[in-house]
Structures are given as structure tokens and as C-alpha cells.
Image 1 (cartoon, rainbow, N blue to C red):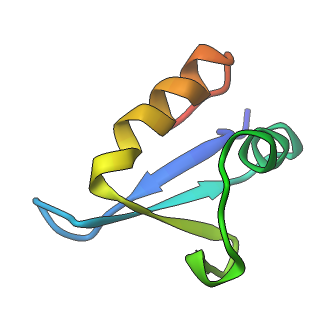
Image 2: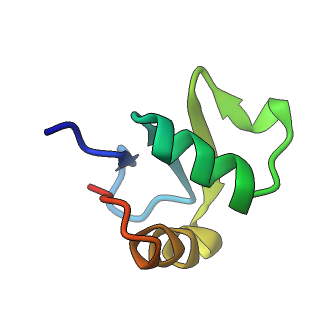
Length: 68
């Protein structure tokens, strides 16, 4: 089974995370719940500041969507 979202950072204390939707449900959730400009995307991943990632992940999980 494919995971809906992944969260990536390449440092132990990141300032930016990459949130990548992998399924249609994940892409729909992202477009309906997060206001983002095109410049905030790196490919299909949304660049998210560290101060917002926990709240976004909580919202994703509350919707019953899997995040890793």
C-alpha cells in the first residue's frame, strides 16, 4: 500500500521540510487545506517552514490520511 504523504528534511534541526503528496487523496487534501503559492513547490513537494509542519501533519492525520 502506498503512503499518502512523506515529510523530508536533510538536517537534524531543519528550518524547511518538504511535504510530498503521493496519492490523489493527499493532493486533494493539500489543495483544500493549505494555501500555497507556486513558488513554494519544489517539483511536487511543498516547502513548509518548521513552525507550520506539526500543525499540517496533525491535520493530515486527523483526516485519516497516512504521513511518514
